[in-house]
Image 1: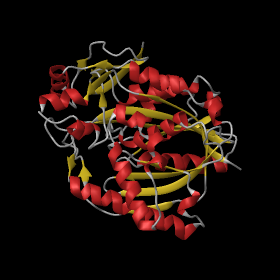
Image 2: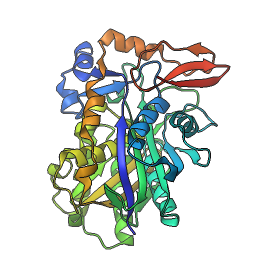
Image 3: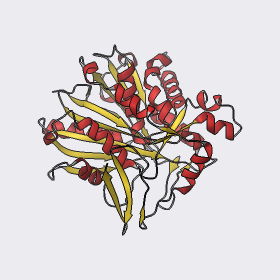
Image 4: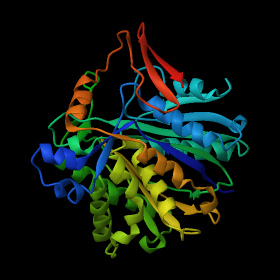
Length: 382
């Protein structure tokens, strides 16, 4: 029985900052961002947006095409959690009007947990093939102003419907896994931005690549040449090129950039979307390559701290009948471009407070954060 990604859709935020604007005000050659990082711009939420509003928009667009009565679980993966107790998926459940007999939970492990959610969903469907699982990845990457991570901010959400007989990608059995305790990136409870050891993070990321690949080979017969396209977690798209080069050196096989090129367009425009990054890469690959039917995709998922997984999937023959690139184009084109001063103010005004406040209407998305009342977040449809 084939089980995998039946359908998917995406959302991003109201605002965007072009990295040429950031480069100009920091007196930096724009090519340091466009070529050195492989990034062109990053999305930034309005004050009335967060991980829940983006997730609800992506999921609503997806579910309009399906029978929601088949959904038994919502697995919400994020490292931008809005509450230390209540799952973001519960807020999402209410906004989408899902029935009460649906399990809703939140998963966290840096940028990796979307893959954990995907694998949990595949296993759940294997047990109950008539049911479906809604997997959500949604994150806002915020870094301190004037920091090294500033140009790699971003925001976005991917909603995926996991089912038997999938329309898009069958997830194959067996994965290569890797976990090691390393402080390359972390965000304590009392900080709104993370702490990053850049060189350690790069080393941990590349080391996890080869370790997860080796573990996969120990569990199934698979040659590197059996993988037709590679998909990588992309904190910035140049990282995918570094990772592919590391895998090529490790396996002694030439792996050229054309194996990943079609997966990077959306991430270049969105910035780092943490748990969503790998699945924006999948979306871009499906949208930009008309010749994937029957091809094997190699997925490399990484979350700092660090957990990694290498797994594979087979693109289904009719996948082109079930992709919606116009929806992504609309999300990207509808963003409002920020000036540098507007960006700085928006960034500086952000507070992670549970004190009572209301937000002015900014976003044109179907859902918004209206504010907080007595420490309770309030959302509304519009």
